[in-house]
Image (cartoon, rainbow, N blue to C red; front, side, top):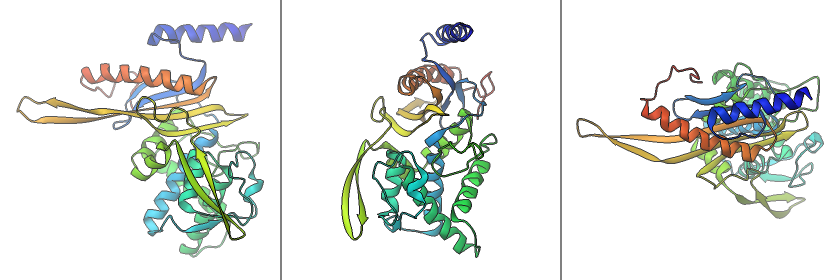
Length: 313
């Protein structure tokens, strides 16, 4: 009974705060992309499992590595022996020894949340990092160090990555993050044109080679909101521990304002929403995005202050 009362009170607070009833959700943050201004939040610093939102970081590390090493993403990788045992989503039914391009591995990881593809990418990149650094060791551990190094770079101080896919069934090695930290990661990721392209696709065909025979698979984006209301990313996630999670990001046409001196100021517009442990992540994400745009308009009219009660990332 106490839980029911608390839930009712939380919904009442949501209604009186934003004028709409937000679906039950443990944590969320809504941010203006270019400045990091927080437009709305709830439990933004609460550490929670984030499931496959982890793959946003995995995709960023792979793309950063490819750029730094001038690696062609058309190169092929092989699924390592341990990867199929990771568990969870494996929509391509990838098996030990299967081959696919790094590019198609990114599509599978970021669009269809394929755990085996993410693990295979991490293993491939980890081997290359060890080789270039003249080190010996576990390729997966080397890749995970890169994930946490990226988190440090982005000031994701309440985040710990323990794998490339986000599964959290190992109670001794639990990954965690916060909605604020995930927003920091999403801003970094969506500033990359190639990353945006991967996560903005509703569907994609990829090719997997097994024993020399190629097979073509059709992938569908697990983010059902892509393409609606100018939403062009970014990622879904869900495990038993995390509950349904979601990051969405959307744009509006640039705003052009005439200045007193006759010049024009062009203002890009993008809002990003992170939802953790939601009852209905897609409905909640869309509600918060709509609310975020209203908050954005008010903040913009007020002269874009950065030091109000919500602050910035």
